[in-house]
Structure formats: C-alpha cells, structure tokens
Image 1 (tube, one colour):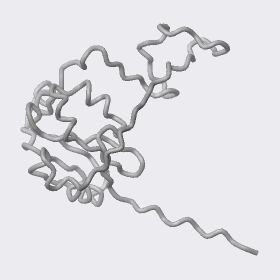
Image 2 (spheres, helix red, strand yellow):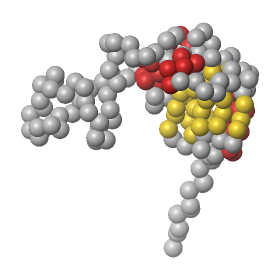
Image 3 (cartoon, rainbow, N blue to C red):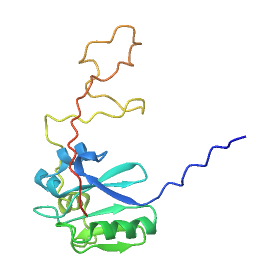
Image 4 (cartoon, rainbow, N blue to C red):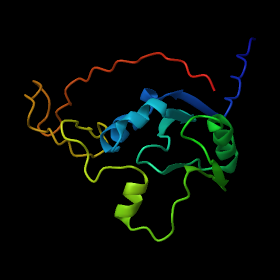
Length: 170
C-alpha cells in the first residue's frame, strides 16, 4: 500500500508584490490627493491577501499597516527598510508606521489630510463591491439584465484586468 506524502507546510511571511497586485489598489487610486505616490507603493502579501502600502511624500505625511502579529510586523519592517517613502519606520506591537508620527488629537478631517486622502473619491471611477457580499452595486439597473437571471441578482458587467509582470527587488 502506498501513501501520499503530506504537503510541505506553507511558509508564512510577508511578500512584496507590484502595487497593482493589491486588493485595495483601486480604492487608494481614487482616494489619494496625489495618485503619483502609487508609483512607489508596494502590495504587501500576508498569507494570500495583498494590501497596499503607500509611501509618504508630497501631501501624504505618513502611513501605517496593522499586521495582526508582531512577527509579521517585524518582517514587514525588514521588507520596507531602505525603500523611498518608507523612512522613519517604527514598530509598536503589530503596527508598522512610516513617515512623520501621527500627531495626537487630530480631528477625522485632520487624519485624512495627514494621510494625503481626498474628502471624496475622484469622479469617473467606480469601485464595485465584491459579488455575493451584500454590497450595494451603484450601477444596479444601468445594465441590461442577463436572460434567465433572477431579478435583483444580476451579475456585474465583466471587467478587463491587465496585469503587468514587473518583479520587485527588495
């Protein structure tokens, strides 16, 4: 009788990927006052979900990422060390911060400005909620229904995604 070998345990850690691989890239793209900062951003993959780390610069004074565990936070500090816009890295428990320290007592509007975010996202870009997660589609009713689909459960129109394969070098 032959047995199948157990799969090798998955190595846990932090991987840096091109910025466009981040799950939240489009949200940042429409929210930043200076979208040119995305040229220095990187997607930080912890487990399987890459999220965007946007550097400080221009009107963005600082940024942060919550890594859920101090071990992953330390790995992120090592991965971001020396990258432009990620200077003054600090680590507190499982939160990694870069740029200027966040002043205490800021209003929500002051925090938004500190992070270089717009008051409202740019017009012309629509971020759709993930299908099946109870999100409300702002374009619902603007697309013709798909024959045979129940009312109110129309699929979103297809989106074309172009992936540019630029490898990052830490």
